Length: 344
Ligand code: UD1
Image 1 (tube, protein in one colour):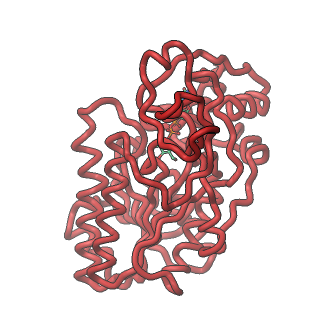
Image 2: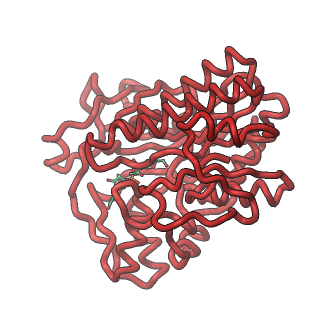
Image 3: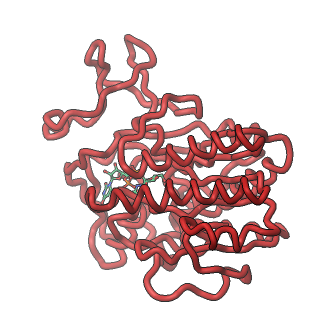
């Protein structure tokens, strides 16, 4: 387990141990995710502090390993382009070194933490022109509070649809580009080695142990941190943007199911959406969290971030059909717990 000391990695490690696997954790204690020293073990799994970019470290931990679960990555939108070399180094060079050492040492199974950011905008349908791909939203439209993408042919507002794994990939940020490169690198590795890769395209993960509000945090942690400080969650745009908020315990179960599939009939490279299948708006997430802690209620600000997509919601059908994975924690239950859970 790379990145096994992080938010998601800690939960995945716990799920693997509970299922009877022996786990070895490699984690670099990246400062974007960790302040202070790492623990000696993760739920009893031994932890080696080291960087996936370092060949000798990777070569040292791989012997005896059947399958690598690769969660180590720099996540989020980052601060500015000064971050670019760090993202590419941690995510792509790191994956390249890992794959090279796996090939050399004969480890042929990989579960890769990917992201829905590889899709860019979600899927849309125009009432007149059918399925269409909108261009990036224009500043003038956003500034005039016209947030819904429009049909490139007729200009009508589009309706969001569920994205499946065969959608065109359109990474729109440095982070998204590095996640897609990880997918491409591991697909090439699988072709050349005969190995198997389950790439898990996580949607908006939330849950206990999530990092607090940082430039690398998702919106759920930002809202939760605001409420903890007694401030209202600030909802951008009109709050109607849709996401699929998936609980970290479900993400851990998806990893377990993917790991089993790489030992069974999964061959080559195969991507899977990891989503709850029950999309919500960002405004609904803010309301639910504020309700759970007794306020203050969210403020809808109309602000916008140029890099944001409007809606990105996914079909979880492939993971259900091929991995036997279905999310079980609904937003209401998950948020009630998250509202009071410890953050990292
Ligand atoms: C997020 C992650 C991305 C991850 C993906 C899937 C970040 C920054 N983004 O993408 O890395 O791969 O989930 O798990 O970690 N918003 C507010 N108020 C705020 C902040 C954000 O309303 O204070 C809105 C944004 O405008 C956006 C939505 O919330 O519409 C989601 O934002 P965010 O969680 O940052 O990014 P995603 O694009 O969903």
